[in-house]
Every structure is written in structure tokens, then in C-alpha cells.
Image 1 (cartoon, rainbow, N blue to C red):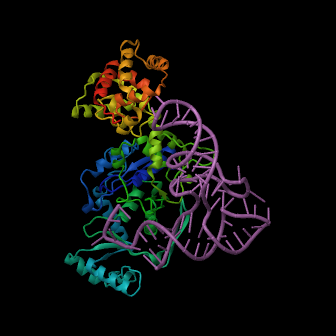
Image 2: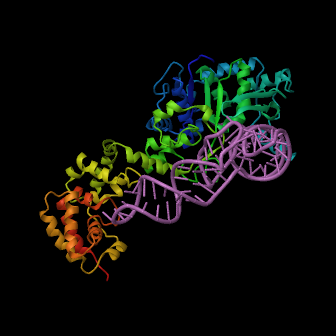
Image 3: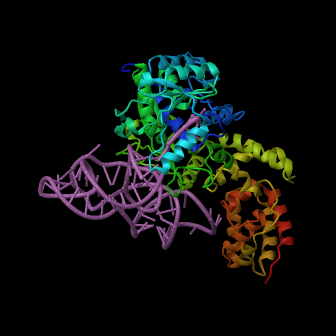
Length: 502
RNA sequence: GGCCCCAUCGACUAGUGGUCAGGUCAUCACCCUUUCAAGGUGGUAGCACGGGUUCGAAUCCCGUUGGGGUCACCA
């Protein structure tokens, strides 16, 4: 393996959406491969036809690519080690299975599921660890089944599975890149099914064969696979292959520290995309769940390229990490604060257009969907939104007339004189040249001073009339962006509609 | 239950024998301020426990406890 080009893989089964844990596994595989100037491969593990979901494979790849994780080899891109879908590699598994059979490392098993279950219950009742009873282990392999009986069943066409013969009492050892040395005793392992009765291989069998044939140098996967390491290692031994290096990643956890699962929150990457999280933030966040650069840095925000430059398996932690989205929210804001306006416009304009199709606005559509207007809105709002779509929804008053006026705020900011003051101030605004934040501010202060009023006496009512709410960006800048015409319209309409309850 | 993995603030973590145990998120207070944010300053908060080893342990060893994973013809 030394000196070979690094090759890693992400091997999901196409059963639905991309799990955030899966995203992290894929990401670490990708980062490691790219860091080492190697190849990252996607292989589809569809050996369970019953769980197959139409379109899942395409969705998986699409979501990965959304995150910036692009495979060098995959079912859609091809490559020199294909096919990359296990259901298209059945003959390969058949050949290697035959080899195991011939070498007496595997055997036919005709036990029915009912029989197996019965046996399991019996062992449980006796206080034993449930384990296959090796009923069909042939005599010549140390079992009690005569070869004639096996041959008879085969000729009969009886359904069967093929099991690996796990040697008794050998110890299996390997060095995990994250956990260090791990040792197992073969006596605790069952004779794992390698080929199912439908002719498909099990995960254990197919993945070992493919990992070898596809020449992966490093297998980076979730910790839930650690207990099946002895089976896999034994298979490498049976075939006389050098196993790749292994790294078992700590799990992503629910708030209660159990394995991250549905029902305790969203686990699909697609869920987070739908909520408005960006690839930048999700990738950054998920990368930091288990990995960090180490001493000497306080960096929290990393681009994908920076992650590639700095990633190493040595700095992956061993303990599980709670998937707590508080920090993800903060990261999302960091990215919004720094993202070029043009890029934000690309994502919010379609959202805005959709809104405008649903709900008419008195504002000129070409203006409010234009680059110039939108980038002004973005600069005013980027430090105040949590998601990009909030540029449209949270600050809808930049696009639509306010329909209601925050009741509490009106109550707090209105005095009996307020409306008259507002009307007077409008005459000032009417002729103000130019209509800019600076000139509005100056005019307002000039208006207010001789009357012995504070600027706030006008500022708050103006904000409420124009936006409907008591919070938002700098009032002066907001008025400038909205423009004189809109500001006037809203003040006039607002004064009529505001109900001042004493 | 067997086997395996893990254990620093509420969360993510730095730390590899000598640190006032550091940072980020969240939280609290204050500052800034027309509001809301953003920003700034400060605070609350942690080495699961018990034994060793050592002049000295968050760091090394053992045990306990706790948590998790896994024990399929699913991956």
C-alpha cells in the first residue's frame, strides 16, 4: 500500500435521503483523499433490493455535489474500476464466493428463517448468546453435515445461503487510525451470511471484495461498523489480500446522546437545505463535528478548500458529537455577513419573483427585482437575517406595503401630536434634494430641534409607518432605498390606518 | 446480556506530566445605539468517580460508574 495513490470511498445505499452523518462521512473521505492528492469514489450499495428507493441514488449524488463533494469516480461519471453499483457486480461476487467454498472458508446453509428463529429463541431461553448452530457445517470442515446431504439439497434446488466459516478461538487485531489498536476474539463472531438466498451478497461480503478490487487504500466509515471488523478482516485473510487502513469515525448524536436519528429532529441534509442553510455553513459545521485543526488556531470558519488543506485523520476525535444546530445558525450568519451581494441575489431573486407572482406589489417589479435595488437591501439587512430567504420574508417591507402595524410599538411610540408632526415633516421631505440617508437625517434633526423634540419622536413612528414593524436597519438608509414615492405613500396610508388607542 | 468504543463548561472543542484548564456557540451583564441586529468588554459554567505511578497529574496505568454502538438472508 505504501506509495500507492490514496483512494477513498463513500458507499451509501440508495434507500432515501442523505443523512447528515453520511454527509460527514463522505466529507471526511473526500477531504482526506483530496488532501493526499488522491481519488474520492462513490459506490452504490444496493444489495438489498427490498429497500431500494427510486431516484435515491441520483438524489444522493446531487446532494453531495451541492455540498461541493464531487467524486472522481461514480456510477454517473464512470471510472476504471466500475461498475460502481453493486447490483451490477453480481458475477464478481459469485466468483469470489466459489473460491471461498472451494477453500473451505465458506459453506452452504439450508436452514430456514423459521428454523433460525427457533434456534435463537432456544439459545436465549438457555441463557446463551444467540449464534448460528452450524447445523449445515460440512463434516470435512469440522461440522456434522454429511456431504451427501448437502449435495442432495443442492440437487433438489432447495433455497440456501452461503456462510463464512469463522475459525474458532483466533484473535483478530487491527490498528484503527483514529482509535489505535483494537482486538476481537473470533469466538464471539457468528458465521456471517455472505450470499443471500436471492443470490445477492450481503454488505460484509460485497464491500470487502469491492474495496479490494477498487483498490481503496483507506476505509473511513462510521463507528457502527467497528463490531464487524473481524468478519471483514477474516475475509481479507481468506483471500490473501492486504487489508486497507481503517478509520472509524465517532457517531453524530441526538441531544440525548443516542445515535442521531429521525424523530428527535431533522437528519436529512435535504431538510437543512430546505430550511435555507447554505452548503458553506453545513459543510463547515459538519466538518467541525469531530475534527479540529488543533492547538495554535482559533479559527471557526473554514472554506472547503481550507478544510482540504488542513484536514488530517490524526486530528479526528474519538468521542461522539451532539448535532446541535445553535452553532450552525451562527455559522450561517457569518457566511451571510461576508458573502458577495451578487451571489446572494442569485439565490433570493427567484424567491422574490415567486412571492411577487403570488402577491401583487404596488412597487415597480423591475426596480425591486433589479441588481441595484436588491444589493442595497442586502447591505442593509445582511447583519440582521439568519437565512438568505429572510432577505425576502423577514424584510418583506422592501417589496410589499405593510399590511399591519405592530400594535405594541404603535402604543409605545404614538402621542396625540405624532400624526400632525408626521404631516408637517412630510412637507419637508417633499422638497428634499437629494433624497438620501444623509439629507434625510439632517432634515429630520433640523425639523425636530426648534420644537424641543428628540429625533426619536419622529424616527420610531416613521419606521413603523414605513415598515410596519419596530425593528430593522437604519431608518435613514431604509427611507433612501425605498425612495421618496414609496415613503410618502406609506406615511399617508399609515396615518389613516393607525389606530391610536389613547 | 456478550463483544467493542467512548468520557474536559449546557453544546463543539484546545490540552498529550508542571496552564489561573484556553477558544467558539448558547446564556447573563454592561458599552455602542433611533429600533433590531452586528460589534466591543466582562461574567456564570467543565477535567464522572476511586485507586495507583510520579516531586507533580485533565494528561500515564488499573478499576468503578456512566453513555453509546453492535450482536439479521439491513446497510
